[in-house]
Image 1 (cartoon, rainbow, N blue to C red):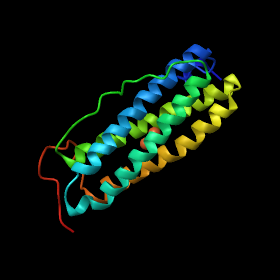
Image 2: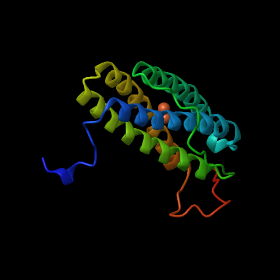
Image 3: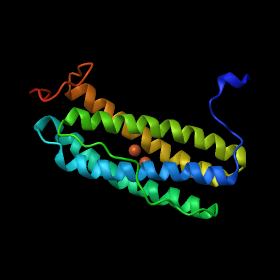
Image 4: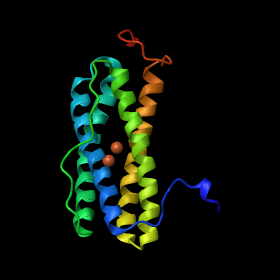
Length: 166
Ligand SMILES: [Fe+2]
Ligand SMILES: [Fe+2]
């Protein structure tokens, strides 16, 4: 396998793993906040179902944060306390797109983290991350479905007029 084919550094130290997991934890905090807020401010009949799903996501993201914090503590690190920044918008499509982008990034990060955990021989960590990534992929699917089904997406979401009726 050539070096150019991999962007992932597999052989990392315990300290590097702690740092990466803390970045993952900051992403989980971001997700908790975004889903908490977006689930309450998404308005309109077209968004009733997805708003309910976002509320459920918020609870799942909290469970992920606790699991990641536990693993950081197990590795001898101190769990971080600050979230990644959360985008705010009045535009439902912009909110859902922000969530979708974050979920895609999260799935990519955990894919990498699982490989790194395996390479370290940290199989319990790997199992924990595998359980989390299953839910992140479900979140990604929920959001993609909501965006495709409810919203005719323009290339650039240009503003207010997005809500259509069925
Ligand atoms: Fe999560
Ligand atoms: Fe998620």
